[in-house]
Image 1 (cartoon, rainbow, N blue to C red):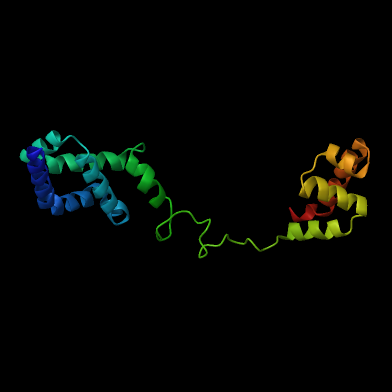
Image 2: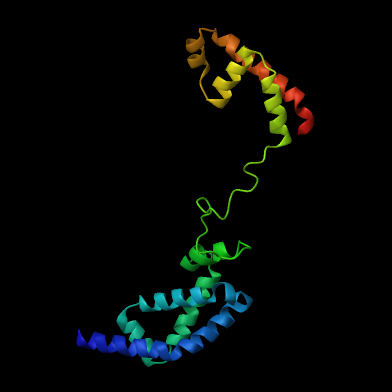
Length: 185
């Protein structure tokens, strides 16, 4: 156990010593994209190295190969589309244009409302106007079937109207609205 602590201390000291050179290596590996994901890549590469068996780490440090090993891990993580780095960092950072704000989940972000969510299109305005002009039967069938998603059987039982009449009435009503608002497509 004491030997492992000594090896671990040696490994930590060696990684601390080569860390500035590792940062330079990450700049070379990442190229112009270093500012986007260079630090993340370095941390993942060092993490992968430290997850290796303690003997492998110790031998790499003893032979001054740890720098090459960590750089190799970083290069592989950067280039492979199946790596952990690709799926946790690069795929998202490379496909966005805005500044990273700590989360890519915009659903609950008050600063990022859904664009045009309150805006009603001309087509929707036309449909709303045409629905206001419908007779009560047509309004009922549109409301029950389209808005509320009721089945024809449920509507038939609720209003005591034959199933075929409901089906024909809905098709006729939707066709009428579609023809009147067709010019907006």
